[in-house]
Image (cartoon, rainbow, N blue to C red; front, side):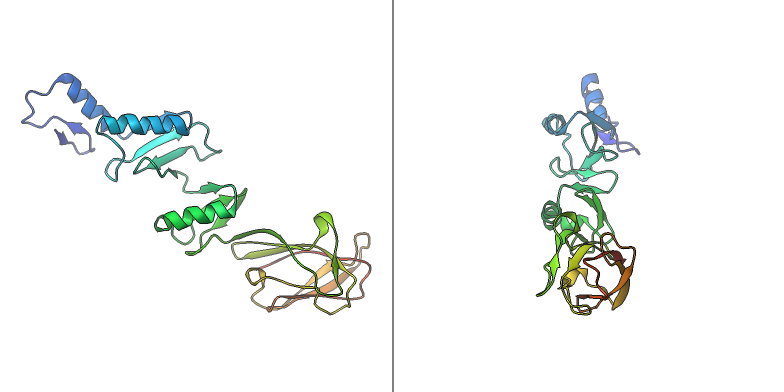
Length: 232
């Protein structure tokens, strides 16, 4: 048998006694078409069947499937070994950052900076060493300050180079540090932002966010100071 210019297996000139069945089986298994499967179980069975016929997945023979139960627009998948499947979209999908981090630790050689994953429904880039995504994290108020309960507690998140804050604090002295931001959420420079002075007032106060992580509302404080801002 030989390969034609499209890398299909065909009889060579010396294969005079090859059966018709062998020709069609060899030729058919060498066609790199997309195989429809219902789910991961059927996908595994396809790999097992091809491997048993000597046409298992390899670098020279990647297997491409369309998996019906894959999420959204990521149903085309390919594999070189039948075990690790990569979405044809190039965008990985994980339920949480821990799962994404574990996958990257095992398969980091496949990633380059700028590759993306959807982690818990949020798109995050790969920096070369980690996924640049931190879920909403509760912040601990400094002494003399308190955070509101529920959805208005001070929280921080970061996606790529964008840091976002939401929530309210109260009870402290204007100009003092209400809480400190974690290293991953600090701005590259000190910035001043406006924040609503209470949950009912239409007045605004100034909040200084220092590069060292200090978050300091400036008065006059009217009840709780709320803020939603984005820092690059």
